Amino acid sequence: MRKLADTLRQMALEDSAELPRVSTVSVVDRLDVGTTGNAITHTSNQPSQPRLRVLHVIDRLGVGGTEHGIVKVIQGLSGDGFEHHICTVRGFDENFARTHGLENQTFVAGRPNSGFQFLLGGLARIMRAFQPHIVHSRNWGAIEAVPAARLAGVPVAIHSEHGYEVDMLAGLPRRRRIIRRAVYAAADFVFTVTEELRTYHARQAWLSPERIGVLRNGVDTSRFAPRPGERQENRRRLGLAGNEIVVGTVARMVSIKDHATLLQAAEILAGRGVPVHLLLVGSGPELSRHQEFVAASPRLSGRVTFVGSATDVPALLNAMDVFVLPSLSEGMSNTLLEAMASGLPVVATRVGGNPELIEDERSGWLFKPGDVADLAARLERLAMDSDLRHLMGQDARRRVVQHFSLEGMINGYRNLYLNLARKRGILTSQHG
Image (tube, rainbow, N blue to C red; front, side, top):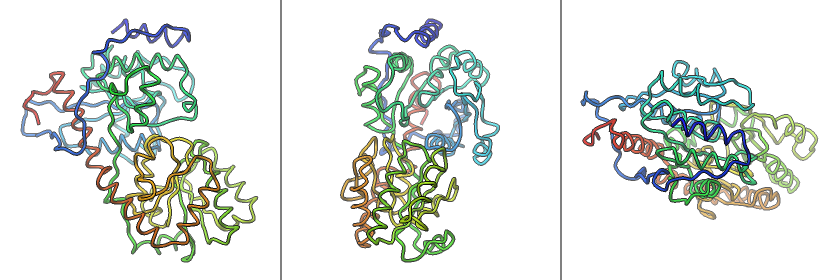
């Protein structure tokens, strides 16, 4: 394991490093982590079985889809023979941690700055102190957790990839590809949340896609559900008129989410006399730029509401008539699933995992990123046809309930953790 750490250190310092040789048996073993079969459950009346200690490692803990996914897993497996802690590389949002009761479950391995930090030693020390049975790292920012787990003697190391950053769209630098290949080889299991992400990361790491698993996200279809009785009150609270077609999105205000395309499409609709109103939920570095665009547009005057960060997302979704996700790239969008579960017709870009969620022309529509005219045309059709909105919304919810439920996702994680724990002898073969 020390040799692996030395190899990774050298690769981090030398862009010209040679591609490491990877044994075909040391990469990902194919495990059944499907979410449609019977779940393997932990029975608490077996005192000989330890509580599985899982350390979730992430770059930074704050508001985001991956972070909310970790919270879902922790909550879904709590009291089920598991003990969870989180380790962050660059700190955490205290409000987020407090809201979800994670203040006393979170370790910090590094400093909050965004510069390079070599954290193998710090991560390994935390692992030796907590003594997890399983380390599960997510995304590039936490990838050092896998070799750290090997240094610390952790029985099981898992790594998963959950989405894209802007700098990933043109492909990864060679150094990152080499490091990923080495780390994927050192992990007991590697997975992504969509087939598209699996293909992307397999190609970037020079691997066959079959060497990487897929475990999809899920959404709470009880919390996110149509509530027609609350719709008018939600709209009244937001100052929205009853006759407006409310088109909304929930996303951080960052360039990869491409709110500009949605704003320009709304301008076109307003110019055609469509009573459209945009409801934009989220904050971020692009917020002020979008506000300036709206202020400078006579057509959008009084037609855009910036909500900022919000915790009452189910209520906000129930105030909308249509949901739009105009991103330039996506992994597997939780907010898209939440909108679909809320019974909204959805219009999203044909990127990333979106085509795996939406049945085009049935539960929603897909369009080319940045195609303002196409988006405007699809929104105008939905605005003018309430029956179409209703039918598409019904199909969207049905698809999420059948294929992307939170229960199915939690069963998938439970199966993955328990299967690997049994394989490493942490649990007996009779367990579950």
